[in-house]
Image 1 (cartoon, rainbow, N blue to C red):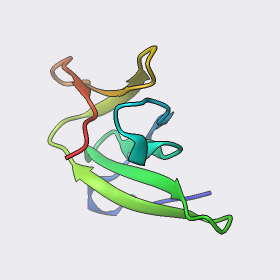
Image 2 (cartoon, rainbow, N blue to C red; image 1 turned 180 degrees about the horizontal axis):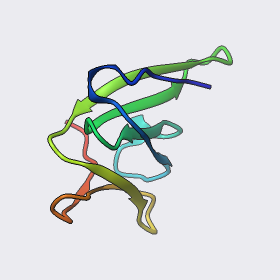
Image 3 (cartoon, rainbow, N blue to C red; image 1 turned 90 degrees about the vertical axis):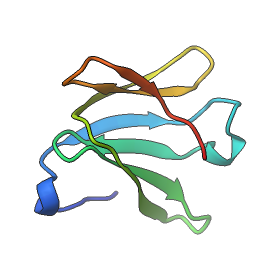
Length: 91
């Protein structure tokens, strides 16, 4: 279980997906989610001892309205303002 405050422009959790794709094996089992108003993204990962580690991974400049997953398990994020669909990629 995790939570975050509404401080700093956060207003509403945009639920995501657990990564199950093949392109980024380091992401396997990590839950990606974000905030609708702020455009921030987080990764929630098991830490190996039964707990979870939560880390902010991106502060995007768009309204995050949804996540999606293709048939290969790769993840996408939707910008409500422009309608653009972004594919999540590792650096």
